[in-house]
Image 1 (tube, rainbow, N blue to C red):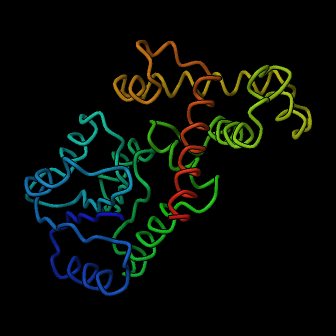
Image 2 (cartoon, helix red, strand yellow):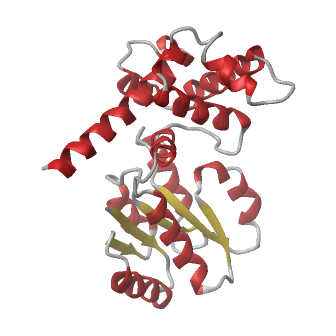
Length: 248
């Protein structure tokens, strides 16, 4: 179940969002609202990656950027962040952090915009397919989902879920299968793209998270093969667990 926190000085707007969602979304726990960043920081410390934070970066009394910086310092996966801003001086500043935000809404925006965004997050966090589960696992890392490397990594995990043998010899297995799907691309191109993506993830994701997720002593131990295999194995375990629960 997703938890929702709203940091917004306009209490009338906040209550309108709050009341609408309370009546409609059974899968959403309306956790808290806050009118300044001090209140927000007291509430965001334990937010998980499936929770939702609506963060207005134009609140006058405090600095919402400090809430955001504090969340990054936690060394935990960020929740879904919906950033709110006007069209003024904050736009360029927010763009620097755009990869951390699920969505940025610029005032004035229709009421339905924020409702639809929150509902979309709720829908995406409901495990339905292997592809959805892969997206959920990859959200744990600091990764740009708009890149070719992200698409390659996600596809590689899916293929290894369906056929573990592809990981035994990635050059003639996984990379070759992926290359055959793409005109003008060979296995070396696929290998280089995935290796570059994994290096980027290791560089920008917290060391603590990398070590705990992949059960390694040093971040350098996380090779592309280990990265793909570990995520695939975790998803495979979740699928088996869900099957067992349905049988109970």
